[in-house]
Amino acid sequence: MTFRPDANLDPGQVRDMRGASGGRRGLPGNFSFPGMGGGGSGGGLPVGGGIGGIILLLVVVGAYLYLSGGLGGGTSTPIQNGPISSTLQQECRTGADANARQDCRIVGYVNSIQAYWTQELPQLGHQYQNTQTVLFTNSIDTGCGPATSDTGPFYCPTDKYVYLDLGFFDVLVSQYGGSSAPLAQAYVVAHEYGHHVQDLLGVIDRSQDGTTGATSSSVRVELQADCYAGVWAANAVDTGYIEPLTQSEIATALQSASAVGDDRIQKESTGRVNPETWTHGSSDQRQKWFSTGYREGNPQACDTFSGGI
Image (cartoon, rainbow, N blue to C red; front, side, top):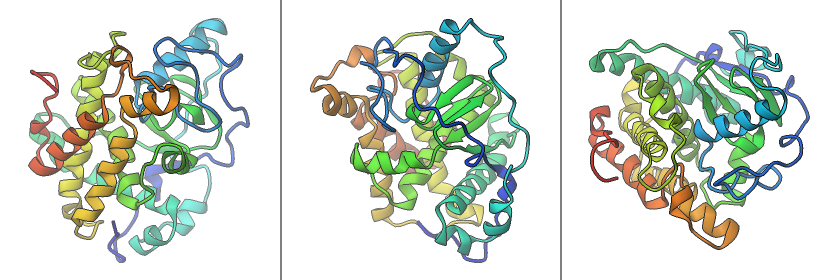
């Protein structure tokens, strides 16, 4: 995946908190959460956690807040608009910058994804609302409570931001067999913005019914976000930021989608697969729905709530 060198980037859509993030890793007491088989190791993903999405954050943060005195404890600080660092403003101005630097690529992904949904969402009867991706290292306070890199990339419905530790991409490759290619990374970002779209459409609440399993609401929400990522990829060139995609590049996104399937993560982490605890979907399901979105190029093809998945 290559950016058009002359594309103008808007670094204001990404807030750089990497220099301001806390240094703690993991939650106090090394908690083990139901259905996940415990926390991940180091910077890895918790078992059955998939990409991180929204459910994992709510479970992890909910447990933390409960054990630390409940909501309203005052541990979260709002994220202000605009980048905290001038680095992105100075270094990430064009598509050429995005081709040269990983953090600038994130800016480019976000710009392209939001440009697409700004044009598309009114066709579904809703106005798109721009939001930010917040880059952090190790840990961060969010509108949903404190979170760490162990959570993986996630979307917080409370403050409506996407959170990302760039170290996740190294873990995705080294521990889970994902791809380091730019489109594979863009897939992760587009998936999280799929959750933002679901939030704007009023769909995201379906993921918060506490159910798990291969056909649960949480899995259906996650697979729809995968499909939305595929829809963006199908239309990315038209946003003016991206050069035409190749089939080999699409294959890298599918590789990463497969790598974060619940069944694959469970098998590699515990040697067993338990569909009753799935929250994001199997490798085959994740590849299927990204492919559906990419093939159809239309979010209306992403109805994961009707029939089989």
